[in-house]
Image (cartoon, rainbow, N blue to C red; front, side, top):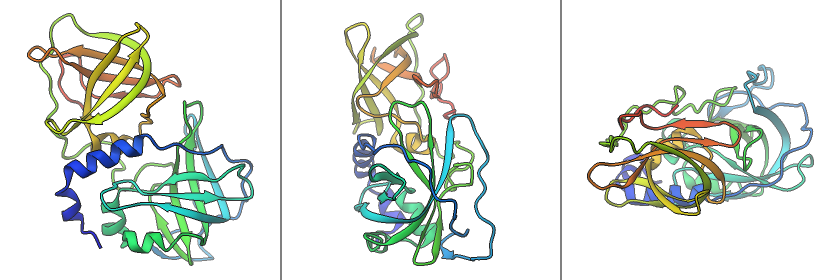
Length: 277
């Protein structure tokens, strides 16, 4: 079993894995799911008499329960921080990729290592998941997954990740930038590429701007973007608020927004890092 400490000793592998993650797609949206929900718990046997998960309605967020589905594949390998399953169900038009949680959380909180996770392939399972409406690409996140009578809980009933329910970064890496005065601007465009910076440890986005130019913009550390659940993928349209640094004249992101007005704020107008919100 890969230990959490060893995982954190491989930052380059983490960054590369997250870049691969951001390029993953998903299937069609689900139809009307069955109403029978799985039991509750955190890596514990399900209690048939226990109450089902109840979802708190939030804007543009849909929570669904799919009982009696099948895990057709497990998308996980060493170095990947966000394993997923491929889940099929009679109510779905096609199998969908459903994200679980970072490896360190699976191992430390749920005692679920990758070897065990891979044994879930071809097993029947109950899934409670959520996804957001009106986004460029639908991304499915598991709230609970019940396999062989054991319930694994990854998120609260309204979709907040249990490994970071506040959405704030406790150990945020340094990412302040001394901005050149008068260079703050906003621009729409298409995400062309997301690559890791081996120097700063942050992700760098290349965007094909509506001004017919390519813009290379420094974002934030890979693990910080993971914690926000912000859907940033190659091919998606976004609106970027950015500015130029004084020394390098390179662009740094202040804020990202999707067409559905899902906004991720990374820095203030002075270039100081803020908790993603």
